[in-house]
Length: 133
Image (cartoon, rainbow, N blue to C red; front, side, top):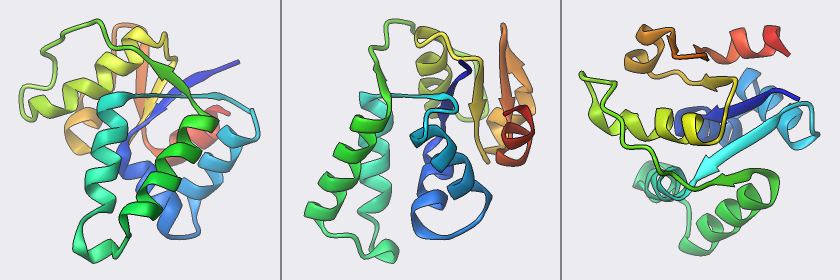
């Protein structure tokens, strides 16, 4: 079964509107691929959902992160990589993928997409991921 890390921007898009990110997310929930996450990515998701523009209460954020934990494999990050020179905070996505033995990373982040791959891990858009599945 394919293994993938969905970047925070993909998960937020899946949560707030219909479209390809939600279609991909549902495929993960339905077991068509294994979704991987890590504590730093969950914290980032909570931080993003806590922004005023999303109007998400702390209890809703807890429910979302718990539901995500129930639908994903939690990866313990052991790697310390310096790959995304333009935006080093994106390294955590690659670290999660490396330590979780992911086949691909799905993102809308231009810094990650610019890499195209890291070692054997493909870095793809939502549309490309849907084609891969």
